[in-house]
Image (tube, rainbow, N blue to C red):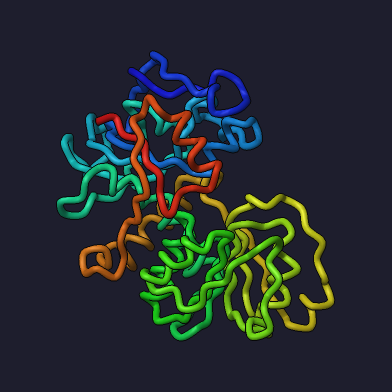
Length: 323
């Protein structure tokens, strides 16, 4: 089969279209023909050599989410059938024509969605739903602050929080992204010039802070979080290290938690998927949620897609397509 390989650690040009061995489904697995795959920050970090794939996952083929068609059903992998249209997460290898997966992890593609639309959903919305509802126990009517609200996960967080009846503030370094996010329900746009420094009326405002930046944003988060609030760190685009005022943490009785999906066990991922399917997937059909697809690149242009995302030009998801 064809796949996008990481030739060596480095810039976007190390991605190349190559012939590789097609995976075979083990008993209890599905083989999916990939039609489209999402581009995520984790893929860029893997390409740079900063985020190696877990054991048992292709080390040189990135890709954490896909949309496609079930090709083969391994023994015991019911209820799926060959020909079913599915979308889902994997720990890597989605930039390829075929991928194998645990049958508990795919989700059925709703209605008449294109494969490109579907590929914009799994990683962003499963990450966001798990962070809000399992990591911090979101409650209706709470005030939420989302950093990097114009990213794919940021927009998923925004929509899920609004669907739960929450008031949402969001940050971005780009005013146009904030304007576009307002059309999706953002209540309070906050333009960040350098490091996040909460304006006066955001001091101790947020019941929940969803941080997709990390690094130097932590100090501002502790100023913006309300007493007994919760901060969930989801991304580290701003860096892995930060100074922390433990006095503020204690005085406000803040819960600080981190979350990621890639390294979780198959059972844990199955629980995340089931929770999202039961609690949120139907909201795409009634219009409360929607996939925000910024741009589709041909799979052969994966290098250009990576450049586009690294330049922070995207509003929502960027997808690679085999079409």
